[in-house]
Image 1 (cartoon, rainbow, N blue to C red):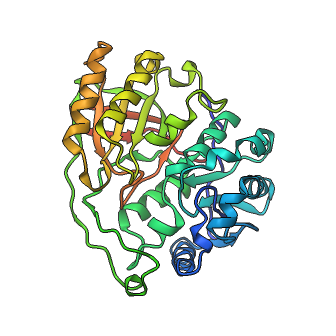
Image 2 (tube, rainbow, N blue to C red):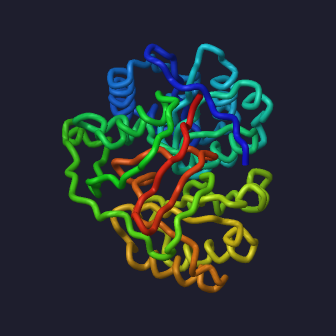
Length: 345
């Protein structure tokens, strides 16, 4: 799968923020959080951050107007002064933008797109347009972390978005947090989340090193894409390393099992070189998910397929960036996950 790589970021570049799912960034009581994330993104990376017309329109307006969300996304891609697009946060129904998307706008104006969770929809839009996009941190969560952006996330942003050298080894984050604060509560504005030691990577099966291009996103969101014009055909998965993560909804074990089995019955699993699965948020169903993955793969005689577990992306803080389309390596013997090339030009 050959995707066009976007241009890297440089100091002073103008980047845009968008609300493609939930529009809470503009809600009274939460807008402070957006401003904090914007400020830290600007100060840490030397960027000029601007909003699109409806980024801060509020959750009710954003929900009622999926065409305006699509309009913001199309405008951000078509504006030559904007070098990258960052999502404010996820949501759960950005698929409603699909009728208003013009893939040619993206094809003709390739640039960095960064987000996760429900923004998996926009990543698959970029994929359909032939553009490599960056499954990574959001304004309201990672960039707005009280006390500063975690170093693990910061390092991944620098290596992935600002450098045109091969990224190399991607370690698991040494820490993680399961603290959840109500952003509308005034008392949480200066409260820092506590971080605890993380587990190491686990290879739950496989004994041979493999390589393949990355493709994936949020498990629950991809389920909503199956059967739509955005879901890729089997050729996109040929030789790929599929990366999956579950959201804060914490998909029950049976839902993960049914979804993975669907990947098998449709032939996707048999095309893969490997799988990278993120730490389930808050460690919920940690052991159950491992058992389900092994069980379903065995149903399709894929006991040899390398599966890396407990990776630090998606609904994890801190998190790294997973650049879609970039060649990666999984080595069960060394216990490593590496990105073999740069994500940007």
